[in-house]
Length: 106
Image (cartoon, rainbow, N blue to C red; front, side, top):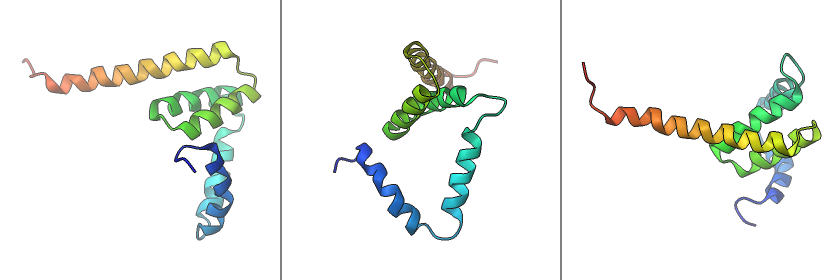
């Protein structure tokens, strides 16, 4: 099976049975709470998560949060805008980190 195949997600059931203690259950509960409606809507949380996934370039997270955003009512236009937000964040990071290469002027 390829490294980045959504079929790997089926392994989460086995993975969860291999996790010792309460860690897995606590993570699932934390994740569910973090992604539930609050001051920020579920849709906006999914769009934020999608932008983060695009910046970390996790193909699983990209697909999961894209699908969840669509289920929450996100439009293709919103998804496209998220791509440019993520691109701006990545570009800004490169620029600001680039300042470390320049000698400091007093």
